[in-house]
Every structure is written in C-alpha cells, then in structure tokens.
Length: 125
Image 1 (tube, helix red, strand yellow):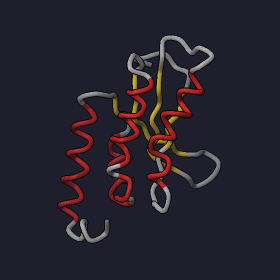
Image 2 (spheres, one colour):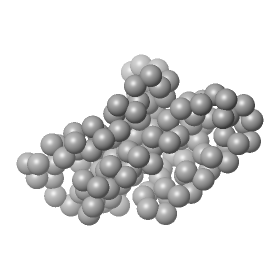
Image 3 (cartoon, one colour):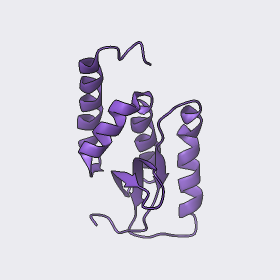
Image 4 (cartoon, one colour):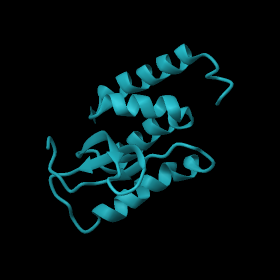
C-alpha cells in the first residue's frame, strides 16, 4: 500500500474518488475528518466501500451513514458506518454482525480501523 501512495496527490485523488462515489449512495458526515484519517491510514481506503456494500446488502431499505467517531475518554478516532432503520426488529443485531463479518478479516494487519454499527436512530436524523 505504501508503494502505491508514494505520491500524495495519487492518495488524495483516490480518497476523493471513493468519497465521491460513496456520496452518491449514502450520507457522509464529517467528510474532512474522514479525509484526514484516510490520508493518515490509506490502508483502509478500499475497505470502506466494501463495508458500505455489506451494510447495503443486509439492510437494503436502511439509511447508511458514514461518519467519524471520536472517543471522548481516550485518544481513539476512526470512520464509523451507521445503519439506520425504520424498525429495529429481533434480527437486526444478528444481521449487523453478519454484515460486519463480510469485511472484518480485511482489517487484519491494517493500521486503520472502521466500525459498522447502529445508533438506533431513524433515517435522516
């Protein structure tokens, strides 16, 4: 991955392309923080679309939101994907775990991180 991004302008173009494509399908909040994170951790650029696609596969009618999480208690921050549904039934968390399994192995050995979860909000919150 480092070899591919020896030139920072190539990295920036790749990040912009990924974010532009994702913004056609999902809501993106805190895009500048996400962009900065991906510049620091380019090893997950290709995993974010895979995680979004997994969420869409298991939750085709839900709103998918890419956001940026900052832990208020410890120095931890990373992109986070929220799944927001009209109804949270008994199978919701089971499906969320299955969606996460689709890309979790891709994070092994990466310096960057991404989380797929829900905030139990309604779409467009």
